[in-house]
Length: 268
Image (tube, rainbow, N blue to C red; front, side):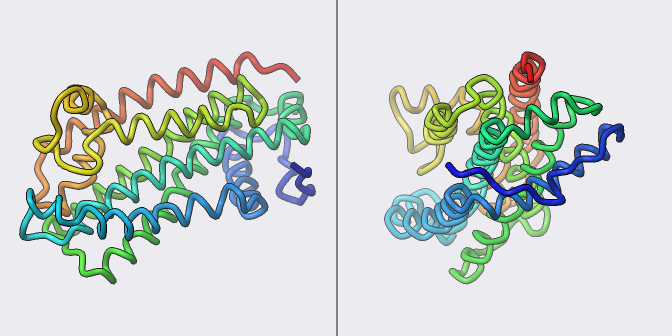
């Protein structure tokens, strides 16, 4: 991979506060995302392709459980959340590129708080998650998707989208801090695939059976998806909301510790 040319956004002012430095890194990260098309394009195309393909192929299966709704009401939230998760993971590719070009070493020896690097990645993932949210929602609206949960349902999907983007970023960044090479890329992606597809992705829980039902029932991604989807399948309820928030909090703490521990062990 060829080094990315330095730009004015590569120069982070030393001695700034944690938030000021983190936001400077966010601006740099957002600019550099456009310089790595191999990471940007798939993370945008895949959610759109998945929405169209899944709703066409498996729409009849969903109508067995929700006969009164468009299949897009099931698959749009799935692909929004999944797209945000992979978008967060792909941000870790930029971190690996920064290892290869020496940017990380420069930041480690600069007079700034080390955790600004991780905070900058988290904030970038949260902002980056809005892109698949907007793109896939447009596809859903054009396809006749309804909004039985109203504005609150859309808001919960946005919360779930940002949450999974941050979780994907923490997972990928934690691995990037440890491996420092693109050898970690398959592990980053497989981790998200396993978590998402061993949950209630294609059909509701009552449509699953055997070992897959058992795993999906204890998989925290199931609760995140349920929270994000509920406003597109019916009214929003606290019963379907709090497990998703709890799942995000639990996974968020675990992955934050995982990433932070990797950051602490970095040496220039």
